[in-house]
Image (cartoon, rainbow, N blue to C red; front, top):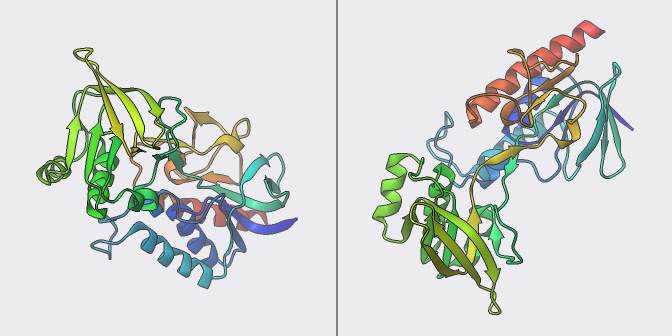
Length: 304
């Protein structure tokens, strides 16, 4: 069993920010991250809305965050998936997939969100959710991107920048919601085409490893078959709250908190993309984390 003043569940920018404040308050703190630290920011090839950096790769930004957190003495436990929790007592208990138990006087849940899966079942193996991670394998090839939001267009531009020959963006709604400037840039390059009012019907694996994709125009009913080397899916995210079901008050999977990032359980806080909120940005997650960490410190001081 490992015991800390504060356990932070999630090693994205929100969890890292909370860790900085915890360390500055001289609290013993630990970050539990089920994968590798960085969260969805790792998958962002260009971050341009972070003060002090006009433009920075998401992985580079998170590397700098991690360096600062480690220098402050915060313990980071990666590939440590929280499977269940017990928040019934004064000491909060968290149990991980490795069999380890962590206890703390306070907990901040900063687990963020995960990509929504492709909306159809398929045996086709070349389905991806991260162009930074997997895009380089498609240089000189053609891919389909599902989703015409900001992520879909941003990732499509990144893919063509890597050398992907052609990207076909498929959007189910009549219009794409990505920023107009980003859409203009994508269409001007000549390597990205866009189909709106188009739904993905099925994906079949071909003997040569490529995929056979059936698309349907929802306005006319017309169907079209397209072969592709790979599919990248960017149709939104869902909250990582499974371990907290039955323990915390959730709305559509997101954690309810008050303005101080407090849940209904004393000593348990939540922050960032995992909470019920309107805007989900890097900077808003950092603001949430700041409040949660300051309130956690206040709570822990009062308990002594």
